Length: 456
Image (cartoon, rainbow, N blue to C red):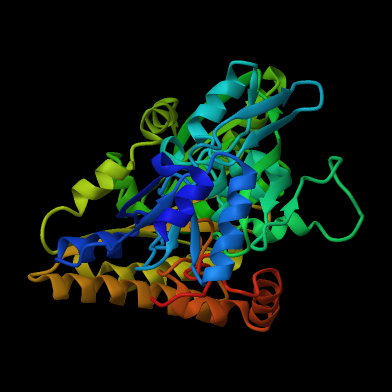
């Protein structure tokens, strides 16, 4: 197997090592003495090599999983013995930035932070800022249907991708289609956003970019309770304002972030951006909404503090948190309509608080609803105790979300973490997804642990 791969990409581009993403349960398993199985990793340098590898894999019954930055947290990158991982790090070129048409062409292995800095030097932004940005690649953001901290203004990754370059499982190449929009059939490239490597290998993308705002005005408000804060978020979004950032922390998360508000008080961090006059007008409007809800104006400090720490949840920090025996920590990002969010919060919090730590903030707001981002953690006397508590928390959150009509994932994806509940959410669309998967990948070459295809 290795010798055949070396004929395609060269001996220096093939190695064998343990590979996995940052799924906390995978890290816990390794800590408990169940190490990841070493697999072959090939590093192609062009789409012809990718095509040749996929054709070879189809002929030999080998499963292939594309790998970006490895910063996923759901176990979609967890290959097993006999699998092949496709390291896409050589696809790291930013090919073109078109400042007149506000588009960018780049390859899928480009680091997310590097791309943003490259655009910033030209007065532009992609507007995509997941907390994990320094460790991401564009291909990984596409594969997980990512969303970022500024999504209420710029949208999520599906709003930024104008077209994709994809090598299909049979080696066929599909290039980006022309135009800012087309009515020539469905926007089929959207099938690859959130597919977790199940339909082929994304080698590049054409992206919609934006000019950096002339002005950004940020601050914070202390709301008397969660219900009032959520109602103000809804009112702001439904007024037509598109905040750059808007994050409401529940009482426990407010205290965890170092803010001493009255009992039940909730911190809202919010920023508005655009032309100076527009940013100021929107910031004033937000201030009026907050005042009408009897929220305390906390000034600029919450915004400045949040900016300073916006990327703090790094891979190294997660591994540090999970290093002690029996420790567990994870996040679960659900999303629901405004009328469901308060009940969702009230029921999920005790379900995940099995180990003591249970926090929640609300972000990624839309006119129709919002993401509820839960953090939970604790420790068990033994590794089996920790695993049991961790799984109970997940089971509680998933079952409550499905019962209330919330989505079980807003932007982290599916992988192995959510495989048990995918069909429950997708319903009849699961048949459509499986039909597409079987049609595009009849030999089952691509990632078997993607979007409900694997075992938990």
